[in-house]
Structures are given as C-alpha cells and as structure tokens.
Length: 505
Image (tube, rainbow, N blue to C red; front, side, top):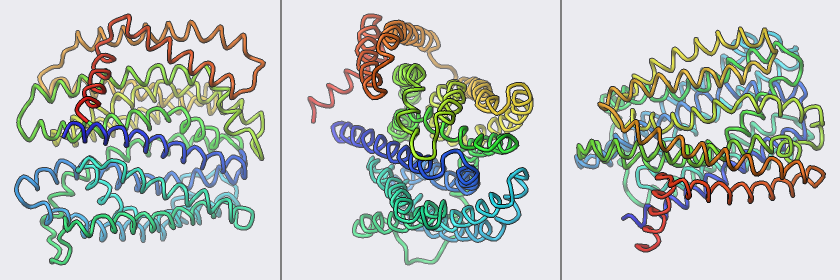
C-alpha cells in the first residue's frame, strides 16, 4: 500500500508539473497574440467570474467528496453515494451554466465599468462561453474527486491538462480569425473530451450506481458540507476579481500584468502546494475515521514543514530570476519589453501571498478532514472585506502595484487567523518543532540567496536561459547542503520517506 501511494505521489507531482507547464504555455500564447492590449484585459477579466464557479465545483468537490466517499465506503454505500452526487451535480451545474450565460450582459458592465465598449462586448461573449463549460466541468469535478479518493491523482491532472491543451490548440488554429474567443471555445471542447475520457475509465469499474432515482435527501446532505467548502475555494477567486476590478480602473494592460504575475509567482504553490495538500488529504481523512488524533496532528505538522521546506527556496529563487523568467517566457510577439518590466514589478509584490496560501492549503485540509469547512468560510469572508480595504488604500498610494501588495498583506492576516482557530480546534500543535524547522529552513534559504545573487551579477550578460539554469542548479545544491547541515527534520523526513518507498516498491 505504501509503495503504491509513493508511486502515486511521484506520478501526481509529474502530472502537476505538466499541468502548470501547460497553463504557462497558455499564458504565453495569450501574451504572444494579444500582448497587454485591451483584448487580453477583456479575456482575463471575463474568465475570472466563471472560473470562480469552476473552482467552486472542482476544488470544492475534491475537499468535500473525498471524506464523504471514504465514509460511504466504510458503510458499504460507496456506489450509491457516488451516483447520487454525480446526478445531483449535473442538475446544479446546468442551472449555474444557464444563469451565467443569461446574466453575462449584466455582471460584466457592473464589475468592469471602466472597460471600453469593445472590451465590454468581448468580455460578455467570452464569459458566456466559459459558463457554458460549467455543465461539463461539474461532472468532471465529481469524477476527479473520485479518482483522488482512490489515490489516482494523475487522472484529475490529465483531465485539466486536456482542457488547457485544447485551449492552446484552438488559439493556434483560430486566434487570427476569431481572436480571444478561440481560447474559450477550446476550453469548452476540452471539458467535453475530458468528461468522456474519465467516464471511459469509471464506467467499466461499476463503482457508481447511476440508474436509480435521484435522492435529493442524499444530495442535500452532501451539498450541506460541500457548499461551505466550495465557497471557501471561491473566496480566493473573489479576492482575485476584486483585484482585477481595481486594476481595470488603471491604464490598458494593468489587468494583464496582474494576472500574468500572479500565475507565474504562484506556480510553485500550484505544483508543490497543491500536490502535498492533495496527497496528505486522504491520510488525514483516514486518521479522523480511525480516531487517531495523534497521527492527524503529526500529519499536519509534517505537511506544514514539508511545504515550507520546498516552497520558500522556490519562491526566493524565482524572485532572484524574475526579470529573466518573464523575459524568456513572454517577451515575444505583442508582448513588449515595457510589459515585461511592468509584470516583473507586480510579481515581486505577490511573494507573501504565495507563501501564506501554500501553508494555508495544509491547514485547510485539516479543517476539511474534520468537516469544519464552515469555520474557514467565516474567516475567508472577512478576508474579502480586508482585501477591498487594502486595495482601496494601496492603489491610491502606488497604483495597480498596490493590488498584489494588498493580496500579500491580506494573505498574512488570513492565514494567521486560520492557524489560531485550527490550533485551538485540535488542542494544540508542536509549536517549538514548527518554529525550529522554520528557522532552519529560512537560514538555509538565506545562505542559498547569498551565494547565487553574486553569481547572477557575474553572468548577467549571458542568455536568460543559461542564467536560469546556472542559478537554479547552484541554488538547489547549496540549499540542499545547507538544510542537511542544519539538521532540518523536514528534509530528513522527506528523504527517509522517499528511500523507504523505494526499498518497499
């Protein structure tokens, strides 16, 4: 069992990396064809609103369905529960899709009143197309959550990769004819293809009872847990929409800079943060099911330290290389050197948010395992108000660059509040262990930065790709040695875990 889980973890990390690379290529395609023009602003702004519901379904479903399905399996009701959730989600997704399409001419001008008439028209049509995809995304979300509960994490990644690849392919084929609409149409096509791929895998297993009558009581009981979880996920997208709304009041391109910088800086979180969180979630759920509180708390502590061990050097390394990375990835076609500089400045401000939200992903998994998602929802709702206040103050001070700074400050307060509530909920964690590990990892990262920064100055005239490779390799070696010499328990845990898996495989 452990060897299978180890293999699943490796495959999931690979699939997560492929997913993030695919998403990065999509952003590069948008930058190539539309640069930082009003078309790019309209597309990115229009996608945020339906994506709030997409994440509500996809990530919320995983966090709610995994523990409920494991519990249903223990009661010999797995097939029934799976089928009822799937059928109920079809109905709910259809309602959301129809409302989103019909109301697009209302909410786009309401949220982005500073857009030009042409940009508004583009945003309305694109948002309607994305909302049409939610019918299929809802079904995909249930299937992806099922695969996660089986430790088949790569299937959900493959589903999302299909959607991104079809979006990119559609842009290459049709962007010159129909502009940004090509990406949205490709997204819908990918959602349909992904649905059939997963159904082809699930149906032969006979793990879902689909023909029986829809039991709304079963569906209501599930969604009573799911809705707070889904809304909590959607809160992050609401905060992003708040930032985009403020960005739309500034010059053309501000929305684009904000989105590209956020996606790039949060890439380590998407690869390692979500990976670690998703892998430990079934283990935490099992610990709760067996009432092993000591194992549960130890899993949270190891998750937090492992996350910090991987994320901190990744983010600091990205900061050192940020101008090189953005220039290498985006500066071609319609994306100019000026756009590169503006995006780089925004990216620096997002550091706090990626670190805080990555750690918070572990704490959230703990709340969801305990079925206390409503507590996160309360704190998350307050974060929206804090984000709006910070955006109002900081954008008046430093323009659109205040938007990512507001996100970082909000994330710090949000995660701090969540940790304190969770700490009381589980009757404490080993704070000394967490603090010592934090200090060791921070020190190792500081040593890494002190070594690589002078090297970067010496090779500043080299090609961006060579600079990135040299600094990344040097930094990784220095960081690993430093963390090992400082006796980081998180590093030793990961190494022992990996070698144990290899020996037992």
